[in-house]
Amino acid sequence: MKTETFATNTTITDPQVLIDTFFKTFLDEYTTQEEQKIRSAWSYLIKKTGNLKRKCGLPYYLHPMRVACVLAQSKLSADSIIAGLFHNILDVDPECLEEIKGQFGQDVANICSGTAKITNLKINSISMQQADSIRKMLFAMVDDIRVILVKLADRLDRMRNLRTVSPEAQKAVATEVIDIWAPLAGRLGMKDVKNEMEDLSLKYSNPEAFQQVKAIVAQKKQEREEYLSNAVKKIHTSAERSGISVSISSRAKHFYSIYQKMRKRNKEPGELYDLLALRVICSTESECYTLIGIVHGLWKPMEGRFKDYIAMPKANGYQSLHTTVICEGKPLEIQIRTQEMHNIAEHGVASHWLYKKGTNKDMVKAEDLSIINQLRELRDEHLTDENFFAELKNELLGDSIYVFTPKGDVKELPSGACAIDFAYSIHSAVGEKIVGAKADGKIIPLTAPLKNTQIVEILTNPQAHPTQSQLKAVKTSKAHQKIHSWLVANDPTFIDHAAEAKREAEIQANTLHSKLIAEQRAAEGKRKRIKKEESNYTGRIRIDDTTNFFVTIAQCCAPKPGTPIVGYVSRNRGITVHAADCLTFLRIPNIESRSVKVEWDKTSSQSEAKENIKELQKEAQIKEHAKEKAIEKSKFKKLR
Image 1 (tube, helix red, strand yellow):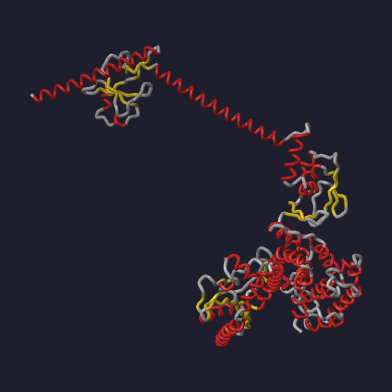
Image 2: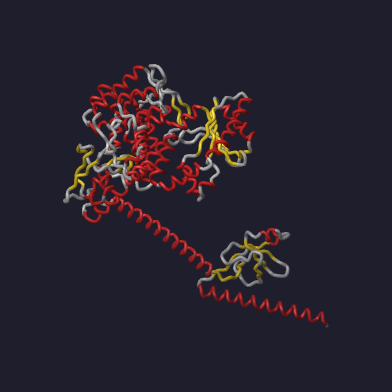
């Protein structure tokens, strides 16, 4: 009997036949001792639930057996199989945990307890962000990753048998699975579980789209099988010539994948070219690269469709070579990988929780396995290694914690947040009236940091109000802002240190501004004094005690009254005056013998200085007028 048929078969109800069929199906997976332990667990389950029926009328124990089959397909340990059988037993007998611990061990009891926590969780994701928070919270809730694997098997079997519930319940469960559980399986690299969950979710959440895709895939089935068969023969023949032994399987893309491509590309299913694919399993990595060359020799590859996920694995550890070629005028996708890569691709993290045959219980080594976000390397890790899983959770959760309201709603808070932060996350009015808090039924200090997965209950009093100590304790910006606003408005003793610091900063800024203004005014005053001093100059040039001589101001440097000056005797212009740093002055021939000491003449009053300047300007105008007349006279003589 095929595993899948057995896992979904509802006609077998006899407990003894069920357990015997289980071991016939998974004959080589468990030792004699492990088989006895699993059979004992099955007997315990039948004793507890043998007379119970579900709403559909089928025995209660059928679902646990199917869950165990899903886990056995992933080749999980005997303890995981027993935990699958017991995953909901606490709903039947909440007091049986100690019995389970005594008869089947601490690991099984812990997994049962963890799955019970998740089962009782209220999952109601409205947005993608909330769904992601819930997925992270699921990791925060458990200390053994097998809890997640058991719960994934439980959800998968629920989806496989969803036809027995009402259409409303079908859509609700399908939405939960597509939002929470299928992405979670994908993040763990469990591609087979993810794909089946997505297809079943589409079937119940959007039956019309599911049937449309199904009809397209079913069209020309015989023609498609012949086409794929011819491609498989060519690959086999070419691989054998190169001395490579391969295993090839053909498949159509799963329905949800086709549906998503239709939505993203706005195309009908018939317009999608990558609906068919071949998977080739090689023995070694080097053979994979040899085979990709063989395939590209057989058919022309499509540009941009080759992906090397062996050299650059995906974040969840997936490795494979992907290419799309034109085979008989149609696109054909081909994936090439080793058997180990295939195990990771199909079962993800579950494939690394396999036990070696024997008694040492060492976990199978897996190098370069990326479980959540980055590549990781595991060396002989044990299935129950708490340090490893704690590291995994820290990597996934980051700096957040996830706690619950008594009604089961999830609240994400920053690490170190206290009950006051939790109260304000519910409602500001709850935060303002908080007087106490319980975590998992026990009173805790209001300022104590909350822990992952605690169920927090807030105690309030109408007379209570926010305090300054609460302001110091909170971590969330909402709680801090609300408490601060209340204290500013209602507490006359509250010293707003933040506001004081802000005012102090403003005062310092104002002081700096005032200082700048003062410096600017001082500089302006200095400029005015210099200008006033300049106005005291008469504008005349003094040589010793006299100013009564002919002076020419050089236009190359045009020195102004008050600036350092030098002078020399010119042949036609009297005393020519330059600025002391004028380069033209330094180039004058025999300047040493022709230089004279000159300086600006000063007067005792500003009015006198102005008059002197006016007089000098008038003299300059007279000289200019005389020069113009001399030029005109010279021209007239030439004309004559």
